[in-house]
Structure formats: C-alpha cells, structure tokens
Length: 224
Picture 1 (cartoon, rainbow, N blue to C red):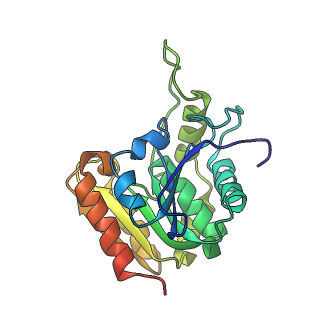
Picture 2 (cartoon, rainbow, N blue to C red; picture 1 turned 90 degrees about the vertical axis):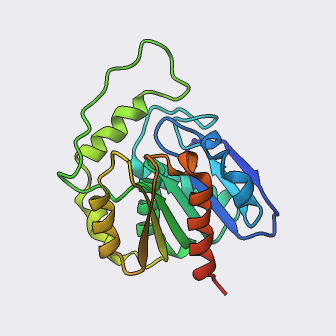
Picture 3 (spheres, rainbow, N blue to C red; picture 1 turned 180 degrees about the vertical axis):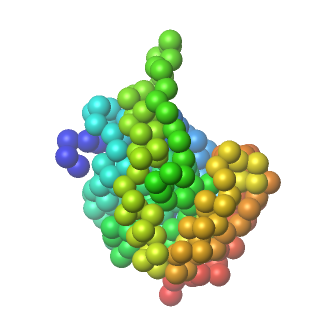
C-alpha cells in the first residue's frame, strides 16, 4: 500500500460477515476493546491502526485521502470484497470518503459522532507539540486539523450521492454539534441518526447502548 503497512487486530469467525473498525485521532485499534468482543460474536472484525498511529507506519505524510486509500488497499490485501465499515471521529471521516469513492465495497456505513467536513463548519487551529512523546506521530494531528478547518468542498457535496445504508450515532454531550450530523443525514439517501447520552466517544462511554444501536440497525438492514 504505497510502502505503508497497517497494524490491525482481527477477531471473530473467518466465515462471518466482514466488519472494519476505524479509530479516532490519537487512538489506535485498542480503543475498540469495550465493544470488539461483542461485535466479533457476529462478524469477522478487523480493527485497524490508521497511518501514523499504533503499529502502522509513521511515514510523515498524512491526510484523510491517504488514510482512505490505505483502507482500500487493506481491504484488497485481506480479500474483503464488501463489508460493514465503522468509523469514529477521524476514522468516520475516512469512512465517509471511502463510501463516496467506492460505495460498492460497503454493505453498511456506521459513523460515530462525525460528519463530512464542510467549509466554515469547524475551526481547528494548529496545536503545539507536547513536551513528552506521544504513542502516535504528532504530525498527523495538525495535518488532520488543517483539513477539518479548510476541507475539500466536494466531501460535503458528495454525501448526497452516498446511498449505502448508513447509521450515524451522535453523543448527546459531545463537543461536535449534533446539527452538523443531522444536516448530513438529511442529505444522504439512506441514512438515519440515533443520539445516545454520551460524550464524543460513545462506544467507550456507553458500550451497551452503542452495540444496541449497531445491532438494531444491521438487523433491520440485513443483506440477503
């Protein structure tokens, strides 16, 4: 994948329907530990470390588009033709871009507390590096913040063409405005939103409620 290798954790029956988990900025695949065992009961789950994070390559080049292409390369490498894509925060934005570029690779799209970036919606000024080392490449932080502040306008425009069955899970106490999520859901042809009493990390704050929302959505929209 363009010289970039991705670390990942895999769990569940190899014959189960594939599911890929994409973490948020500064996290890695371990962030999913509260919900991964339950998800793996019904799916073959791949929890990825996105570039610059965890055990994946730290190449110094970071963008949502590069992460999207990494995930597509990963799907090819593990021979997953189609599956459920779950993304939290930054990982959710990566998932949106993948759904826009290659909707045929997804059976369902699940977005946790994130919406497609659009111009003027969020201001994320650069941050100074911390005094102590981080377990991820800090360069990824300001690269992603810059794209959130000044995103490609087509990212938002193309959400209107994403007809993959989509669930958006909002945290009621999150710093991300729910209105941004609701406006994206209204644009998408086949999307619904649920709000859970949690902060930005819904799957960590309220794992049971998160799993209930995911399971209910997938059961209602089963692929035959």
